[in-house]
Length: 249
Image (cartoon, rainbow, N blue to C red; front, side):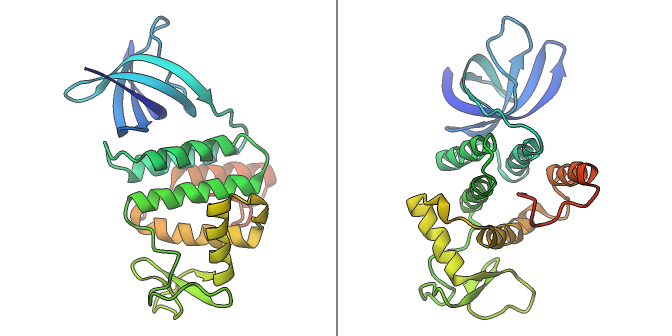
């Protein structure tokens, strides 16, 4: 039986002379492994950052690519390529196979598409909203609409971010990121209204620190290779380390 789905290649690996093994992130079936023929006549693509319509046949170990049509390609250039690899690396490391989430798939493609453009603030926002959607599907995203006591978020208060407790008006024993209440309320507003002109650097920096903190227990001690490569490349270009304020990752 042949199934159809939208999908984007996360990773490709050599398998045989005439075949390639793809890690494919799909809208309807989550992350799956696909075996595709590597020939000029085969209508499939193993290009990273390309949205395609796939026809797949299920096998005992892999899916087999029966047909493929390109839908859209994210033309990402320069250092932004490593932000795209960062998205793929998060999915490869954190998502289990066959965990389908169409909303996460949409956030993933929007984040890739944003990397084509020069608006750095919008790029960061889309990266953060993807991370938030990923944490939500993994059951690890705290509620941002109320604090740990069930009270509404107040603009004039600072909130401490806890892995399990969520947002607290009181500090924890271990150091944790602090989110100003007015930033939390602005995040909620932008999510609902898409008023991206309200984005600013302090808000995005607080948001990034919170998401890094929440992702770290899931990622463990092994560093993200995409982040290491981006830092290394930027350091070579600028002769200085990539600072927290200039990196989207």
